[in-house]
Amino acid sequence: MDEIQKDINLRLLDAISLENTSLVEQLLEQGADVWFRDEKGTSPLHFACSNGNLEIVKLLLQYGHAWNVIDNEGSTAGEYAKRKGHNLVYELLLEEGCRTELILEKDERPSNIDYLSQPLKYSQDGTKLLDYENNGVMMGWEKPLMDRHAEIICIREGLDILNVGFGLGLIDTAFQKYKLRSHTIIEAHPDVYKFMMDRDWNNKPGVKIIYGRWQDVLDQLGTYDGIFFDTFGEYYEDLRKFHEALPNLLKFDGIYSFFNGLGATNTFFHDVYCRIAEMHLASVGLQTEYIEIPIDSSNDEIWEGVKRRYWTLDTYRLPKCQLMLEL
Ligand SMILES: C[S@@+](CC[C@H](N)C(=O)[O-])C[C@H]1O[C@@H](n2cnc3c(N)ncnc32)[C@H](O)[C@@H]1O
Image (cartoon, rainbow, N blue to C red):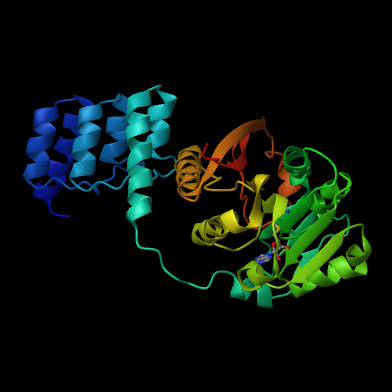
């Protein structure tokens, strides 16, 4: 970077820190670089969010600053605003995140074909299911969450339940306690299917196992009082497609829920994706309530042997979704 550019970039950071909006605009006009970072990876947007200056945040976004940059510690500008209690700035960034993500063109990559063709490992103690790269497919620490999902879905006995993704069978074990009328499980991985068969899941009360990807077996399904969705290695786009199928699968007074791991390593990304999911669900006629559950997954021991922590938040937002009925 030449000295002149560096100088104008540093002047931009100074102007943001001094909250001199007109100078910020002038420097941006003159070619100051919105992609500039200091040695800690702090971007102009991080500085503006830390000060809580709404006008400057708007200006930076208008000049093409990305909403989702992270500093060297992995913190988003949204988090800077939240930590300092700048709620209006936080809300603006949240809206920008939703808007940008919603207009992004969706690609049509086949999601988890690789995952489905590679072997899996169940740990001896039954608390971990890992893929071939030691990514955690499902982990025992999620049991209290799965119990809660089942409890929220099973509001009475005699229900028809659909679960997509068996994993460790935690939610299916929980569902079995509710004296269901029928209990359909879709599972696509051959090793998980074998695990289920070895444990006689096909002979448990009401259980019908459909072996295949949910995308390929939709025509074998009926309608259900309760539906739970928790797959692995798929994109948000897949979840959205499943949501689009829901009006044909959920009975009019049924309850739908899904494992909410959306952006779950960063509170700001999590907020953006929770809101996007809520908007998409509303567009197919479902209203969503997020039930907050405190959760502690910080203990190093539970992540031993697992490649990456896929959860770092201290609150789980359990989605409870129901069809909006027109009167
Ligand atoms: C996170 S685990 C589910 C854990 C489960 N909720 C439990 O309580 O143990 C995800 C499961 O979804 C399965 N899966 C992944 N993609 C799928 C797909 N497209 N259709 C059906 N099952 C899929 C995986 O093989 C895995 O068993």
